[in-house]
Length: 573
Figure 1 (spheres, rainbow, N blue to C red):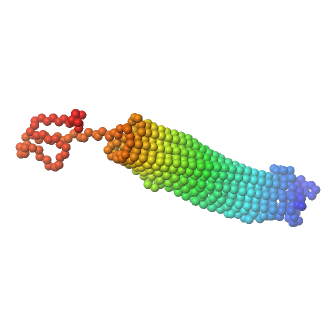
Figure 2: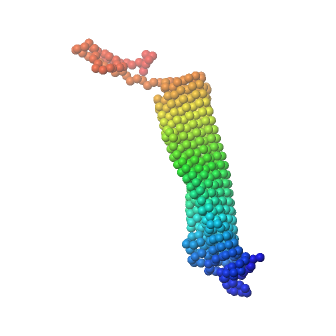
Figure 3: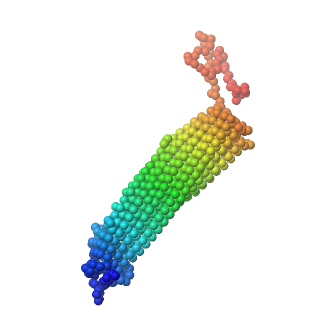
């Protein structure tokens, strides 16, 4: 049974006038002790050794222990504190420090106006329950830590830091107003469960330098930077967590690769999911809503895998740029103000089973020959501009892709290459398949139904190669203008009105099946031939030429010449 000591500045029978004297008496006896402290303000520095429990006799908030300089409590042994308020202002020391053994702070308030509020040193164990930490940071250095139902307010630095091999668990707590991070894990392990983190100056929770961080069922909001940040080869997980009103919902970079499941990133001021600078990460069953710039962003060597996720509202859906990579499967993108899928500048992306609805643009690809995208099993529906548009020298492959309603189906321009297989376009107002500029379009087993304009067309010096294409109820099934070339092989044009093919003579029509007319553009009239008139040549009875002359009409020894040009059928133009 623990020995009991009473501390009261008013004195009394067997009462000690201060806490320090009671501690000395308990240490002298060398056994477990309970020190009950009467209400009051005690200006002391407490050094606690052995198995000691310090308790406020009349409950939390009734006892204040403080010092203007130096530590307030140093623990050596098995120490517990219940209901005290511990306050200090010295940035050079730990206000509360556990040097050996274990320290438990229960229903305790720690005020550290500068520096460290609580410090668990190497090989110790510190527990905080139902406690409040104001202004200072709580640090675990190579120690074990357990935090339950606590509040950390207005830390001038990080609210909680786990470093140098520490192992920390934070449950059911609230972290608010930290000037830097809410929780930082560096070369250590930490899990944060069922917590609220809000109003941090930098990333709300961060893992760096091979740290391991698990975030579960947390709510993170109103942070000035990232909601969650994984960097420097850190690892971990994020499960069933919501991030709201952060600059970036979650960022991974420099080799970090968390697994993120069932989480929501809402109303982010820039990006929702951001993977950059060789960052990694797996994202499953997540939602990104109303990201102001980009919902899912991979850039500068980032390489995420994103599966079974939904993007809704906001500006751009998924953007892979500047050498970024990414694999995206079973993704829904809807109701954006901008482009659903974007692949730019030497980026590479693979999209599988993607559904895009009610966006101005579907997929955009632009960049040099290192810019590639593969799309398999996608549906683009109600895209107000174009389902797929690629430019530059980029290369895109589409397999089993459907575009329904909108202006344009699939278009390629610049010097880009678009390959399409087993795909269809329906109900567009402008065109189904298009190649412009010097773009190249190769399509196999495609269908275009109900285009109010063109089924397929080429302009400029583009090349269009379509095999096994079916065009139904299009105003013009295929059109080739300017110097556009190509071929239509084993194609079928169905309908009761319109034109099957309108071409410029540079297109091979192989086994075209249709009852509709095939029209060749009317050639521009040739320039009128040059007229050479030689009158009264004194040397030769005819004209003299000093070089080759073509397409001329000649007349000589005539005082008057009249030329009339006719069409090929002999009629006048």
